[in-house]
Length: 110
Image (cartoon, rainbow, N blue to C red; front, side, top):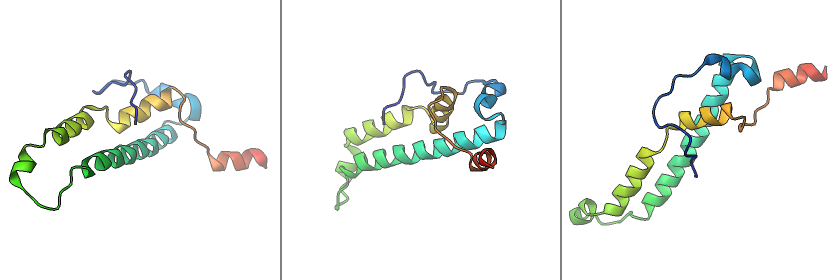
């Protein structure tokens, strides 16, 4: 998963009114952001597990465990990535998340 460089890795103070531009409701916006953060988290975990599975061995040898620098570097790389919540917030504020509200769509059709 390619992560944008503009996403801060640490906490940033946000103006809550920025979250209401599209949904007109802070709570709906946060629900959308949390669902997207879960999707990102699952995808990152699958990528990490896939890369670490290459190093899996059937025999536990202490020398291999302590000297596997590549595995450590991969783990450190994923630890340095921005948190999924920060990625989801940035995507939401930039308008990159598609979402629909079935209740509102039903009201418009009626």
